[in-house]
Image (cartoon, rainbow, N blue to C red; front, side, top):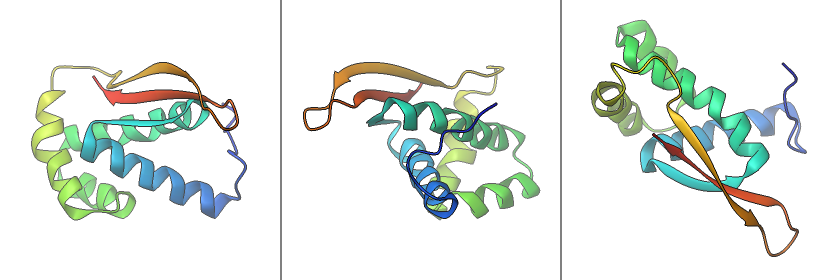
Length: 112
């Protein structure tokens, strides 16, 4: 699968996805561009899968990626319980139209 570069070098792209993943799990719904949302979907679903596993190794992997310890705690206690019977597809992307400044397609990405 081809990865989107999002106009950034590798370090900036990793930091962007880490922050977006943290914000999505913390808030449940964020507004971003369509391309960022499509890239974020894969990392967010991997983090939720780690939360469903629930063991110590999974918690440490999540702590290494997610920026906030309280968000990791929320992921393992509340979000994982919410999706325990779901096999995948934890996120939804809803298009909301172009951004006023540069006409980039904006969308909501939310946890289902």
